[in-house]
Length: 104
Image (cartoon, rainbow, N blue to C red; front, side, top):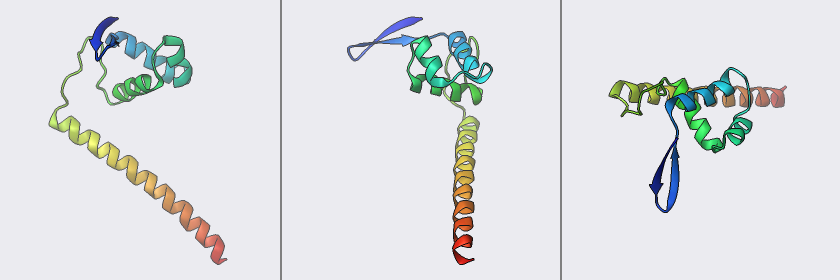
């Protein structure tokens, strides 16, 4: 772990291996993000970001965070759009079921 001075605070820098091991505790061992973050001394938000990076393939052992390529940016945008569309679809399904009951 490396420490970096930032606006009067000391920011902790964790290795890719540490981040991946932390994410694997959540994904493979099925520990909660909150409990894992607390035990490792990192914030919930930080561990959530690591998990997201890992699932997107952006967190790799020995690889420093690089700027996303245009293809990666497009893929990220499309995944977010798909997630939003699925959410909207679920809302519409629930609304239509609700109104169908009201009409019956």
